Image (cartoon, rainbow, N blue to C red; front, side, top):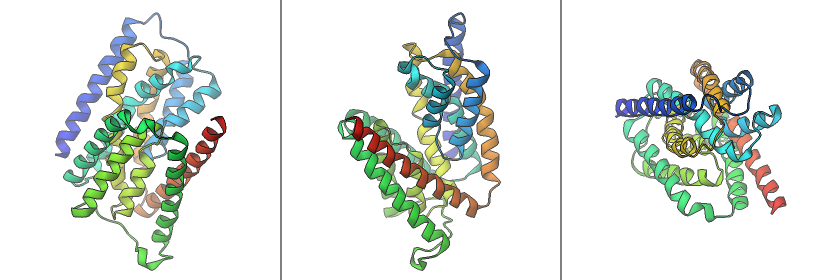
Amino acid sequence: MAQIIFYVLIGLMIFQAFMLVRDVLAHRDDLGPGNWLISGIIGFIADFADTIGIGSFALTTMMLNITKQNNDDRKLPGILNVGHAIPVLTEAVIFVTVIKVDALTLVALILAAIVGSWFGSKFVTKLSETAVQKWIGWALLITAILMLLRQTEVIALLGKGNTAMGLTGAKLIIGIIGNFLFGALMTVGVGLYAPCMAMVYMLGMTPLAAFPIMMCSCAGLQPVASINFIREKAYSRKIALAITIGGIPGVIIASQFLMNLDISMVTYLVIVIIFYTGIQYILKSRKTASLA
């Protein structure tokens, strides 16, 4: 099953590359604003961060604003989805190859996230963005604290040393429901990475298992979204292509960095990322409420 996922990811990567290169060549005289080097560096930094679980969209948005690469905010969603699609697919290919998660668990959670994203686009977008951000933020903070207590064995009952590479029975059902909800919540701006990391850890899996699950989940979504952005010309070609070119080596280097860490260090890194993301969501909810 993992081999099938691998070939599907390679197919999506080839398809995405074909779509992007064909559009760039067809409009080689109208590539839009941006600097090749600066946008490439942005791609490298953002996709390095994405590979270790921090995420790339918010970081890319911030760096594009600081460097004044993009002059049309309407094209930002297209830049993010088109520019990061191939690097995210590269992440998924690497992690699904080197981290052997149980095939049933991997496929079930990926499909749950994809179905959840479809459901979210229909219904979840009607929820209050402020409330969702606030409660997800607090949930992540509490989870990060519990993970830290578990890892340091401050509370002995929580245990330590997650090693499972798959889920069965009730835990598998909980994982499917959880990833379905995380996929749905992506449509209101709640990233899947941190909640997925927290969930698989609390269900007893090794923190490394979260990486192929969350990256394959997102890798299945971005190329599909990119089709419309490219077709509608709703992105900046130069910036997106430069981010793609810079992002791929960022992914490769970050994956080597992550895989060379011992599992205890990976766990602490995941805890920091979840804690950081929780704070960001709480701050974002307050900002959204103040603008309402």
